[in-house]
Image 1: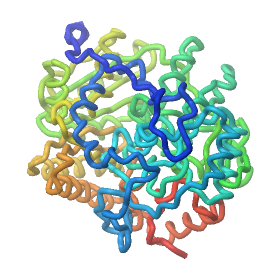
Image 2: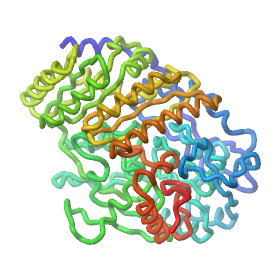
Image 3: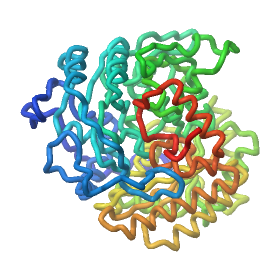
Image 4: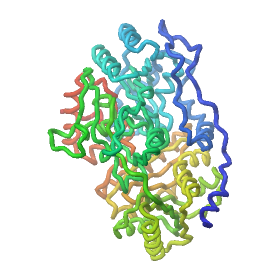
Length: 567
């Protein structure tokens, strides 16, 4: 087909990949503790990024690392110049860029206990600690970094680690695929970073039950590679590199959520280690149960503030028999949003409906050497039998034509479809390539579907009037709307303008009975909006749950629940 050949001829111009960094064999010493594990290191990039924009994005954004002083290999960054008194980062109306926290040095006795538990699976190397303390895809920063990074291999080790840390009241920050963007893995109080990357086994696959039991460190891409030969797949698709444990912690979703639901809909059961070391199984493997409180849903979205997930039972789906991917251009984002709404109202069971504005398409063209029409664009995916998917495609084409749609094209060939969705997945890296040396402030609002067109139109007007480079990406089928606001990290004026735009979109969404975060989670970045969205009573209830399960506040402190909340 013409559309297929168009994408097949397009070649990514950035095909180089910088070698992955490994843990240093000659680490900097920190007191009398040294790096103990030469086999651990920076997380390897997913295979699918080998010809992607990630290397350029990191290189172009290298100036952002100047925010913290790397010359001092101490356990914690000095906070003398950043006195945190009278500052409530993440509280109501907070606009602080650097997350502060009260630092207390980790006792040597605890380090010794951790070495006994983990043997070689522990490091205090400064560069490794800094890497784990600086989110890779987030503009959020903290004054402090972890004192030690540990790599457990089993649930038993996780239990012992938490029990020891609880005894000394030392903070613990769970660490998954490092793809979160709201500061979830910051260590504002220092402490222990517990990296789950070595716990990545598939423990059991039940093909006839269409479920799988996995450890938290496995990535969704790795899992789907494993499942493919069985004709099954796990349907959530957040950013490449995301781990299943982290996806549970942030209650993520992705482009397929419009068809299959979010993480809360696709997890059957969990095993979680509580702060005191107890191991809790939240449910059986039955597809439905009315037995007691729904502890599974309590942990999903808790962002590591209640415990550490060590096992997940996931609901699987059959790989579709046939699929069609279609794209269509529109004169305005409102026209595109109206078509997305009309498509959902028609009853068509689409599996993806993605919206990209003309600025995002321009970034993709520049970064990938493409020649796509630079106009607001909708991308659809239809699944089912060959006849059914073609029928769906024709119906949507008719809907689009009634809303000023043009250049409607579709693809059925595997390579053409793969190339199209690869472009969508690399949208963020295209933004980094378009704005070298800049960072991205990414919004994540979600509204009832009927309000999506109004929200996008209102936001687009404000974005276009700004001096900053701003792109629009939306999971238009379920009302989830993102913008990538690119700003120079060395310019306080640009940072505040980015924050203003973010505020505008969040408050617009809340005025439409929406949410400040559809899928990225709260972390430190969205805490300031929770009281307006949920009310103080809901936050006080969360605080009571947190206090009951984690009385010493060791689990990912400073995240999710705003600091001004008390009861």
